[in-house]
Amino acid sequence: MSVQSLLIFLLVGAIAGWLAGLVVKGRGLGLVGNIVIGILGAFIAGWLLPQLGIYIGGGIVGAILNAMIGAIILLVVVMAVRRA
Image (tube, rainbow, N blue to C red):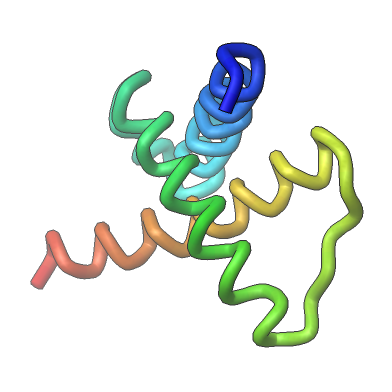
């Protein structure tokens, strides 16, 4: 993986995590936490969405939307675990 690919990956993760934090009632986890949630969310959505027959277009916008959906799912699970 090149440095440019890594930076794009981190940027997509940061944007997706930040957007997910806004959608899930402002429950962001800070910059580093948002990047981690966004990256993990991308992996979750990359596995889960095709299993459900949902395919989001390619490109940077598709990657951000895909990661954001996964990050929202992950934040909801984290909030449920914290409440329990």
